[in-house]
Length: 127
Image (cartoon, rainbow, N blue to C red; front, top):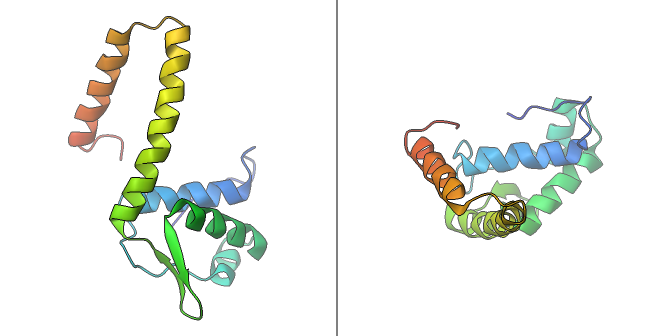
C-alpha cells in the first residue's frame, strides 16, 4: 500500500499522510473505499497507532478522508479531494513562482516547464 522509510528525516506520520494522499490522488483508492483501521495499519507497518491516528486526522482535516463513527474511515469523494488538493497546490505554486521570479528565472522558462509537465501528465508519465 504505502512505503515507509524509517531512516528518512521526514516523520513517519507525514510519510503515511503522503502515501495515502498519493494513492487517493492517483485513483488507487476510490471514493468511499474503506481504509484499514488505525490498529490494522499500525500492526501492518509495526508502528504506534497514535502515528496512524495523527496521519488520519490530518488527512481528514484536508478533506481526503472521512470517518463514520462505528463504521470506519473512508476515502472522500473525488470532487471534494480534488478541490482541496487543487487549492493547496495552487497556493504552493504561487509561492514557488514568486521565489523563482525573485531569482530572476524568466517566465518563458516557467511556462515551458508547465507545458512539459502537462504533456507528461497527459501521456501518463510520472504516475
